[in-house]
Image (cartoon, rainbow, N blue to C red; front, side, top):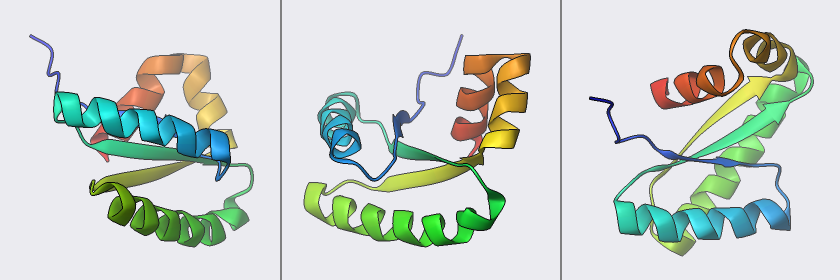
Length: 99
């Protein structure tokens, strides 16, 4: 039987739309007792450190505001595009749930 204890994955690009999606994820995660994982994709590896710092600040703010523990992960677009060639959804979900 498949393990159904997977986190709710929310794409995160620091926009209001992403925050709205996060708010919906919070409601769902409370109902299902699931963790939330923010997924951010960077286009260039050199941006990863800066965006990681920015993401951690957002996570702290959102975690405090909504009272939820939030995890995060990042993909470089090169890594992501290679994963998608193999198996789009299972590659992303597999990587995220392993985090």
